[in-house]
Length: 272
Image 1: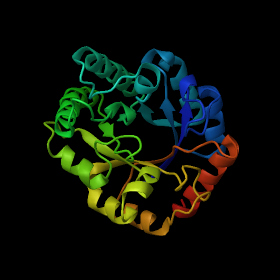
Image 2 (image 1 turned 135 degrees about the vertical axis):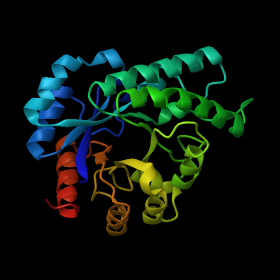
Image 3 (image 1 turned 30 degrees about the vertical axis):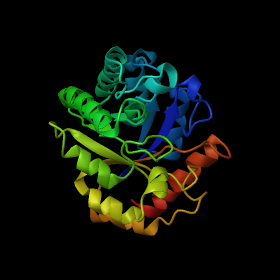
């Protein structure tokens, strides 16, 4: 069964970014539960920034799961990436992601590698950068497997990375890895920029797709842009997707409106 999720950011440096809730986990859990979401997706500044022992009963109280945890604070706060030419900084990036994997693992939630994939340029060409990314993912995905969850890799749009920007390219990259414990995050905002046909890209991605960022063409909540959702929803049904549709959207015009628009659309598309 396809499930709903909504994002909450705890990263001060990301203020103004595409996350719906910003007032802490207690507030996010309360609001998400009130509206009927199945889960939250957490963007934390570090693995030790969240008291998991305190969060678990809060989640239980509100009958919520954690859909995923983001690693992007490693880039936003510390400028780290898995393709940094400097070996020491690349090691720090891997250690940061590993800590987030363990944090998410305690919540049965996979970690997402998005902005921390970095980019190529200067003395680092594209093939070399992809080699470094593969090396890091081959190291990190088995750690996620120890927690019974995949590692999630997100192709971004051309303005955020120059590595892999389409689902097809990302699927090809997965085939080069030594691990099979990696799934793709299909973000509808990025796909609106890069894919000629979003629905077909989802069909072609098939079982490789493990998570969806459910957002409109302008990165606002569903219904506030010009995205045509009918073929996208059909494609998700065609591939028998049963993961989370998570609202990684700007809190516009405010968090509550973005959340309400998202859950209303989710219920329209996936009535229970």
